[in-house]
Image 1 (cartoon, protein in one colour):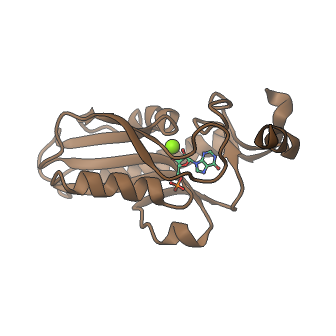
Image 2: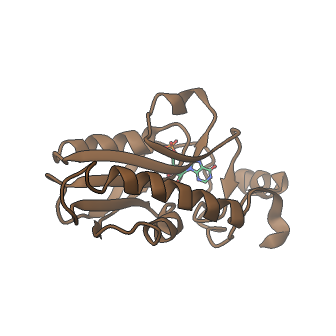
Amino acid sequence: MHGDIDRIVISQAQIAARIRELAQQITADHTPPAIPGDGQVTIIPILTGAMIFCADLMRCLPMRMKIGILAVSSYPGRSIKSQGAKFLASRIEEVRGRHIVLLDDIIDSGGTVRLVREMLQELEPASLKTCVLLKKNIAGAEQTPVDYVGFEIPDEFVVGYGLDYDDHYRNLPDIVTLKPHIIARTQSA
Ligand code: IMP
Ligand code: MG
């Protein structure tokens, strides 16, 4: 697996440091006086990509919270371009009146986050903020506003730290690019 890596785009140490900063911002926006009371926050990772990001981020958040999960597929199988976001499953106890923090691994075309935000807005949360670890620097991404961004990256396909190619490489601790022949070989297979 490690032989398939082209280069490290963001190291695990950089990710960990940035997550602590994001957690501070999110905490300031989700504890009194920014919101009343305690325990009204629900964090919702979009699975599978945001799983590892969520696990690390939520352990840096000190407030009482619930977790809900949503599974969406936009890059099925060997796709490296969005095939359109589709809901697979959800398990969220309640949204109405709660302060929702939606997490995704990456914004590319923005379609996934847009679809999920629209669905959640209809359930009338008290507030809805979106946090992504990565945002690709492409025109479409700007059309989907997000509240917290970990890193902006160039428009290239990355894997690791939860992000996959054909469901592999999620367990790499750094965010990396793959050698071109890995993708070229399987894209034409
Ligand atoms: P969007 O809907 O085009 O914004 O794409 C967002 C979703 O596609 C994310 O939730 C990821 O799962 C996946 N995705 C987008 N870009 C990449 C990438 O470079 N590597 C791996 N997955 C990606
Ligand atoms: Mg995803």
